Amino acid sequence: MRTKKLFLLAILSMLILPFNLWAQSTECDITLSPEDDVALIVEEALNNQTICFESGEFRTNFTIGESITLRGAESGETVLVGATAGRSVVRMFRTGDTLDVTLENLIVRGAFPIEGQEDCFSQGNCPDGISITGDFNVSLLNVQVLDNHDDGIQIFGGRLITDGVVVQENGDSGLITQGFSQFGPSEIRITRSQFSQNNSDGLLLLGPTQFLMEDSQANGNQENGLNIIGNPGPNVTLRRSDVMNNGFDGIQFIDIGNDALLESLRIEANGVRPECAEDGISCNGLTLNGNGNITLRNSQIIQHSGWGIMAVLIQCGAEEDDYHINLTLEETVFENNTLGESCLP
Image (tube, rainbow, N blue to C red; front, side, top):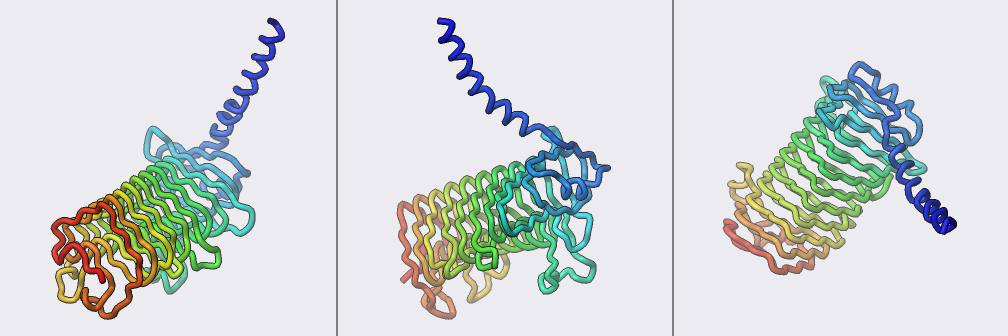
């Protein structure tokens, strides 16, 4: 009996040990107050450290070069505000072994351009909220990315997971990825997140990328909710999400050349820009251009100033015929679209 008890105690200790190690790993190695030099401390951090922030405003720009966790205060706002013109607030740039980076409970805002270079794209120094380039696995948990001069989040290569993220009122797109870049395609998973009121697209996906968005919103952006461009383009899955009240189209596909599954979506009242009322301009729930395979299932497409779905064809009002998409519609409801349910071949 004693031997049996000792054996059970040994097994129990083995089960408890990993939990204790995990608990230690999530403790704060460093805690920062607004008076501290954030950039110096983050850029000199050791691999796998956890840096915690008190509540308050931290004026900073920094580059992450190790696997690291940055955690804001749960009991109040921790705000990282851009301090240097022409720089992203949080920058990650790496080629080589992949680094794991987690940002939690943070507000990232206020990246601003160099004076006189507000048209920063031609200068190559557009300041984003969070810029991710190269070999990173990045998790954004309960993060807000607000009011940055260019994109809220820019990712070239690597992997991004968001959960409980708000990307709002940025000067260009809420999120942009560029699979054609030298860093290759990204893998992006968006859950329970919002991309709203950005000055261009809510999400702009360029070139080959794996993209999944679930239980999220792309609402109230000045141009399109999602703009998906390729040949080859992203492999896209959208589920249980809203795409509403965007300036032009809810979702625009341009020559994706790959597969897209759209399931349980509410695509509603897109085309709110004044231009959508002009002759020759059709702002639609979905606009489909070029090549690809798209399945739209169990969704609602309602109340657009143009078509519910429009193929880029002369008969639909386009300037040319450029539609070679294999479209499958299953259990999708169309209501109150001004020009009609769809314009397809």
